[in-house]
Image (cartoon, rainbow, N blue to C red; front, side, top):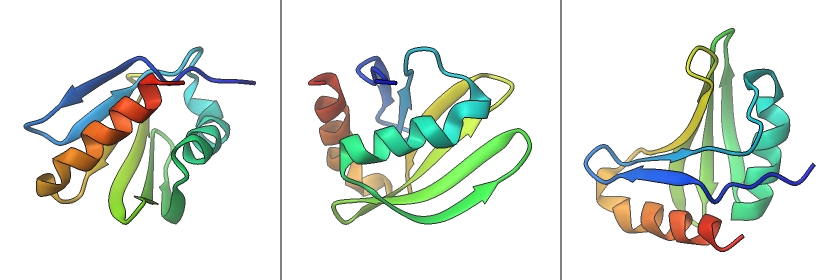
Amino acid sequence: MDYDFSRTVINLELGTLVVTPTAFEFDDFATIAAVLLVRLDAKVIDKEPSADLQQWLIDVDGCQLLLKAEHYTASMWLELLVLSEIDDLIFIQQLLSRH
């Protein structure tokens, strides 16, 4: 399935980028995340799964972020580890909006 990741909301103060793929289901997070990682040319560094929160540490061209998904809110987002790398998050948002 081809997912549309172009609907995003960025919060510059918190360093987060909410990604709202079409037909997001928490149980399908691993599949959806794999497609997103390919789109961003990102690498997984670590995974921390739990029943209601998925948290992956990823690297996008040298910028490390957390890719998170929450069951209760049916939401998925990217979160900067270092707030000063906000330009990288803006670039990711622009990249996703092109597809």
